[in-house]
Image (spheres, rainbow, N blue to C red):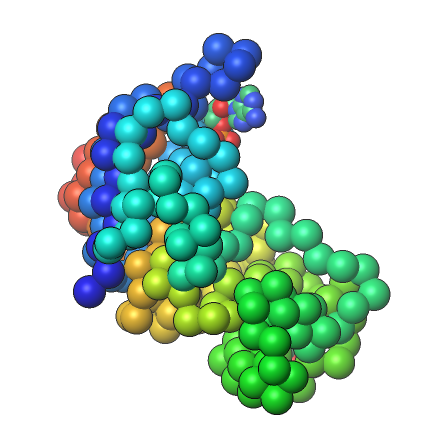
Length: 225
Ligand code: ADP
Ligand code: ADP
């Protein structure tokens, strides 16, 4: 069982904005929803956990790994789908995943081929593998994004606002995929869409002005709202 523990994490940007204000959360296997309006601090928390930016104070750990002091250890077991997943214009889904597999340290070509084909199949894009990612719909791009986040059997998957801009059909397909992924690892999903949390999450927190203002089950939160 993996466990992500976030303790008293705070961050103030140089412009004086306090994006994280004493954030404490404990997360076990499954999909944890982080709900909050734009500007609440969700991306700041996600980037900190993904070791892309530093906090001013506080600690965070995944199992035995100290995320703040052992960022390179965390990166080995991290899958990250950023809010704006940058994709390369004229590259196919297969090529994109192959490049990401190299970056994750899978050097053997035969091993990469196996991983890439498996993931293309998992996200239902195998028959589109030789098409340019640029030509994909929003939903298809997000599924490629999840596939790249799954390379290397991560223990922690961070998805930042993954359903923004998706139509209801695409969103449903993405939900199914994420629900499948969430059975095996810790997934944190940030969103400002209440339905995302209602559909997918067993536990959640609500964030506003950098603070956690609710933590518990989606049912009791939604009853309160
Ligand atoms: P969310 O993801 O919930 O929209 P963010 O973490 O992006 O929230 O932003 C939280 C607050 O921090 C906002 O007020 C935002 O304007 C500010 N902010 C985010 N990134 C930076 C930055 N690099 N420098 C200064 N302020 C920032
Ligand atoms: P989007 O998912 O972005 O709405 P489409 O509905 O056009 O895009 O689907 C693109 C392709 O992805 C389909 O032609 C199909 O091959 C594949 N696909 C999407 N979802 C599924 C699914 N649940 N099962 C099987 N194939 C799927």
